[in-house]
Every structure is written in structure tokens, then in C-alpha cells.
Length: 582
View 1: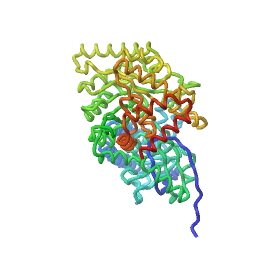
View 2 (view 1 turned 90 degrees about the vertical axis):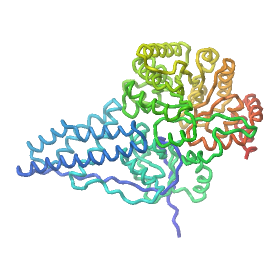
View 3 (view 1 turned 180 degrees about the vertical axis):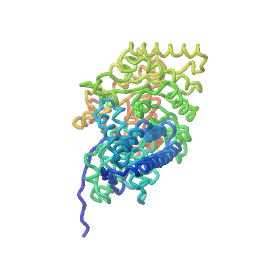
View 4 (view 1 turned 30 degrees about the horizontal axis):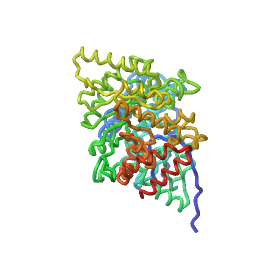
């Protein structure tokens, strides 16, 4: 008789989107038991030589990972391993270890481990998130060196079947690369956050990942059947067979494989059944394999998030460092447009995690353009970098969280100042570069007519617009029933923005989650949205729904929906329409 294993529903932090099914493999990392013991005077030089050899072997391993990351993801992420190599070869630290081996005549692994612990202990409680991130890197590097000191060498990779869901207390960036090579279906960890290097690499490699799942490595057993929802941060374990099959049937099509299936579509951009071309674009952040797929299909970038440049190092990159990244993405996607959003930090991103900037209501606090205008040097560096990369003519600038005309004026003033500087320096850039604003707070929608006079395009951030309009924190599980972009009040603000854009003859896009939901696509097109920019995993389904609908029907649908008075009626009407397309 087959015994049904216990079913679990675990909640964590969404770190890399996508939906995956697989058999769990728990990775328990062997933690070295390091004993302290005295060594004879004659063995001191041998211990120091053992330390040097361990460091050299670790550097060889890290260089291998650095090259692998460079080939699979690209330079910016590969630099994570540069920092780990710097940690491994820190001369001052190694000098301290050797001096203590000589003076105390203690074994190398003990001295090295003790000094590492002395180093990371204060960092673990540092208010600086960059310092806390450093702990992960130092521990990852030191564990490798300790393994070599103990004569274990590089961890021997076990053989696993493809499509496993790997579960551990935590993984290092190098281990994520290794899991990718072993065709991991998904990753689940007990620790970590969405802004660790491990999460950044998982996103760039399109591995669905959920982190921060309480005791995941203890609650899940190897062999358990696991469903990972990287978009929602949910892990389902040992679902009954019928639920597993049903979920797989309904959700499997949401996996990242849909991105690859884009290449098999007969045409892109898609056309409606009445032969109108619909502009679809992708929201991206980290460089990675996804760029090649999108660029080969000539899919433009409707939202290029730049926060990763800050989050991956915990500090703002220089103008030159940013230029390299923006120039590369502009070249790769040329001639398609790339809409670069300036730093949108704050709220659920870095600033709320900094104790010095802790705010009681971070979503309503110092974020987006507000933070940028208060840091003019950092904002200027970014504007100059974007302008320098704009020489091909396919870059657009998008300003986040504009809530007031005065904010737009200040931002435009800094942009014009940067242009003047570049002209004086005879550095080429797109003199006619288009600048747009995100419509993501109700005040921007209400002031859309005034904003439209001053910018080249609008892009609606439906997540924040919904959150602020309905006063419902989108991350609050208790408010799931309230947070809905199809609420009539949100739709009317969107309509106001569309009307303003039309009146001033500028294009308007939607780049929030709303744009990738097939239920919403006919409505948004019918309302007059010019472009839908979405998570790349949503593009395949979007193309399919577009090919089935007719524009004149969508316009009638939008007219009907905008007259409805409650959410239930709106959802019901849209569901009926979409069912008619099947």
C-alpha cells in the first residue's frame, strides 16, 4: 500500500520568478569540526605552506566560477566572484593568520577559522546591508579554504537527475551556477533575501527561486514532490496526485519555458484577428540568457530596472560602470527601444532595510524620484551614463514615482544640466532623447494633462497605482482581496492617463503586473494602451490572446467595463469575454 506523504504549504520570499515542478533534493552542507591543537616548532612552516596551497586552490576554483558566470550571465554579475577572489587573497588577513600560527603554534585551520569568525561577527549585526551581504561572501570563501586545509579539496558534486528542486539552508553564488549546470528546476532556501548575490544570479539564470522559507531544509525531505511558485514565494510539498496534476495542467504554461517558445511563434509582434499589430515588450533587470532570446526575436525593453546595479554591490556604481551596462544593453537590443528607469529604490527595496533610513511607512516615504532628487550627485551620474549610452538613438529615460510637476521640473533641470556638460565635453548622445514618467501614484494620474505637456511618453506602473489608490499594501496577505488593479477606481485613473496621453499625442504603456495577465490584455488594448510591457515569461500567453481578439471588440469591451461599478462585475465581464475567445 502506498503511503501518502504529508502535504505542506510553505511561504517564503519570491526571489526569482517562474513556476516549477520537481523532486526535492536536500543539500546539507558538511560543516567542518575544527579542533584546536598545538603543533611542534618544526611543523610551523608546513602549516603555513598548507594555508598558501589552500588559498591557491580556492582561487583556482573561484576563477573557474568567474569565467562560467561571465559566459552564462555577463560581466556585471561575474564581478561577484571578483570580490570573492579579493576576500580569499586578502594579504593583510592572511598575514595575521600566518603570524598567529607562528606565535601560538596552532594548527592552520583553527587559526584561520577563529580569525574569520572575529571578522564576520560584527558584520552580521551591521546596520549597513552591504556589510551584511559581505558575511555571505566571506563565509562562502572561507568554507572553501577550510575544506582544502582539511584535505577535502573541492566539494565533489553528487549526481542528480535533471529537474530537481534543490533545498538547503542557503546556497552560494557558485553553487547556484553549479545547480544551473545540473538543470535545476527550482531552488528553495531557509535563509537569504531577494537581494543577495545568490538570488541575483538565480534570477539572471531564470531559475524559479523562493528564499526565506522557515526551516525549509528540515521540513522538506529528499524525494518529496515539490511545486515552486517563484512569483508568489510559495512552495507546495507532496500535493495529492489529483491536485498535482491539476496544478501542473493549469500552471505549467507559466514557466520560463514560454520565453523559449516565443521563438516558435509565427510572428512577433503579434497581430489581432482583425490584423492590428500590438506592441509587446519585456521588463528586465539583470543581464543573462534571457537577453539573447529577447534580442533574437527583436523584442524591445519596455522597462529596464537599474536597481540591480546598486543591489548587487550594496553601493551606487560610478558613471563609467553604469555606462558600460547601459551601452551593452542598448547595443544588444538596437534598433528596438530600451526604456531605462532611473533608480527606484526605497520601500520594499534597499532603503527600508537600512536602520538609519527606517521609516514607519516606507511605501509612502523616501523612495523613487524623491530619493534621486535628494542625491543629485548619484542621480547626475546615472543621467550622464544613460545619455552617453543613448548615441544609437534607441534609449528612453523613465522617471519613477513622479507625484508632482515640481519633481518633474527638478529632474528635467538636472537632465538638461547633464546634457550641457556632455556637449562641452564633446561626448556624443541622443540630443532628442525621449523622457517619460511613470504613472503610479493617483496624483500623477489626476495631473496627467499637465505632465503630458512636458514629457514624451507615459508608462503606468499598475502595481503601485493600485496600492496607492486602494490604500492596500500589495505585500500584505490580509489585503489580497482588496488589492486588485481591475477595481473601477484604478481603471478610471488609467483611463484619465490614457485620455491625457491622447490629447497630447504621446504614447502610453503599462509595465506593471497587470499588463501580463491575459484577462486584462483585451481591456487595456481596448482602452487605448499603446504598449504592454511584462515579465518575459508572460509574453507567450500574451501573444496567443492577442492573436484571438479583435480590436473593435476590445474597444466595445472597454466601454462596457468602464461603466461597471464594482470589481465583481468587472471580473465577470472580462472572464466572459476571454472565455468567448477560447
